[in-house]
Length: 326
Image 1 (cartoon, rainbow, N blue to C red):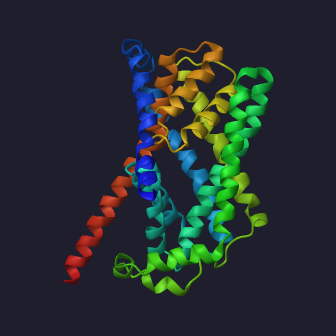
Image 2: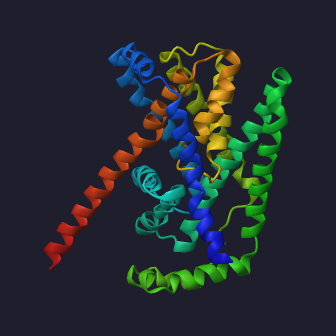
Image 3: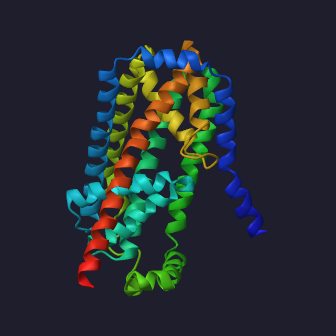
């Protein structure tokens, strides 16, 4: 039964890809090429800088969380780990590879493997819950003006919120979580990486109280706002000229629906959601999909490439050092 469920779960990402494939069949690629040709090259290149304020806000949020969690990691190492997480998350199903940041984090701090993992989980949870809260508030606002959307957006968002609460309660079962880490750290691979020494350290060492997370949570919301305001400005390049707050709200809802585990990095489900939302303002599918994919390149592919460069450079550096020692 368990094996059958795991196989079904592996097939879930195909749903989003099938949706994405169907959307591609409905597009006019000549119109899309014309859209891009109308954008000055200077503005296309300038768009690459969108990742800078996004990374800055993520870095600020993480540094605040690290201090609360009593983990000391420098700005440069934090930025490296963020980009490494982008790379491994990009090349693995469901972005699960982003959790390799715990290994790199362990190498550049004195924290245990359990503490590093707890910190990364907290960071991701703060990001996701803050996005859900913004989406829930925004969908209520959207439902006031477009009643046809509220009937299905609010239930989905409520489901996601309660799922997040359920995950939090799950991790509060301390004995269960500790047993999982004991088994992981006792594995031969962990012993080889010298992480097995952490078996006596608790996952909950210096675990922050919810009350102390209010500042990182506020920074996370500010970070999301920065991201979606930039999304609005990039949308102008594709002729999407509607009030900024609608573009911000549509971007939030698109990412929330895209986060459902039925696709790869939101491809398909995000585009389908954005097409439906922007259709209220009679924005063409070609413009919406072009914006969505270009934004995907800016905020996911580009930092992932930077992360890949860092990983390759670090591997070459380690290889040279090991060769010298031999």
